[in-house]
Image 1 (spheres, rainbow, N blue to C red):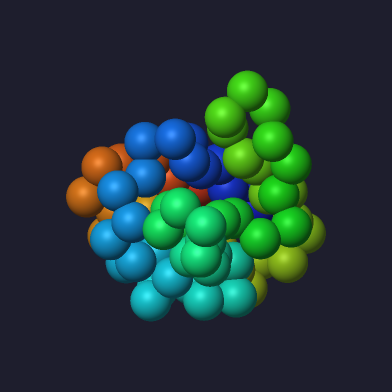
Image 2 (image 1 turned 90 degrees about the vertical axis):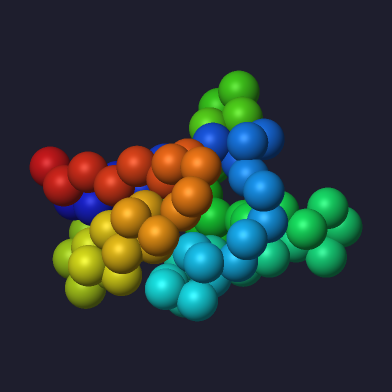
Length: 76
């Protein structure tokens, strides 16, 4: 399983994650911060759990590109 976590309140809206993984991330028109699509919110931490391992590499690239290091990708 691939687990992607986003700490959205610390997002600076740089858009790198959307460029790296557009199927998983999208910019909000309301506040200019990223949204982790199909995720659940738990106290500001948005988590996506997926059995689709094809998203692993693009999400890891998004995490590496993030200048404020608010994206964590784990494989279980």
